[in-house]
Image 1: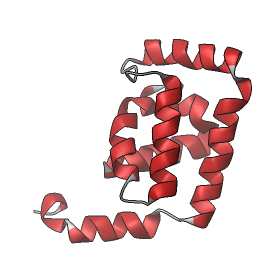
Image 2: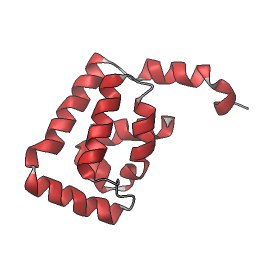
Image 3: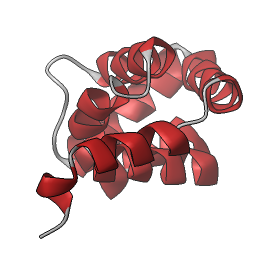
Length: 113
C-alpha cells in the first residue's frame, strides 16, 4: 500500500493521472486505492473515483488501461484533468508524508526486521 500510494504521488506529479494509468505506475493503482484510506477520506475518494473511471473491473494490464485512458480522453476529456486538479489540492490540504510515516512507524514490525 505504501509503495502504491507513493508511486501514485510520484507519477501524478510527473504527468497526471493520464500518465499514471497509461503506464506501469497504474499496475499498483489498486494498492494505492487501499493505501489512500490511511491518508484520509479526500485521498481515498479521489483514488477510488479515478480507478473506477478507468474501468470496472479495473484493467490490470498496461495495454488495456491505455485503451481505457484513450476512450476516457475521447469521451470525457476534462475528467482526468479534474482528477489532476483534485490531486494537487488534496496534496496541499492534506499532505501525505506525515500520515505515511505514522503508518509505517505504527506498523514497523511489517517494515523493519
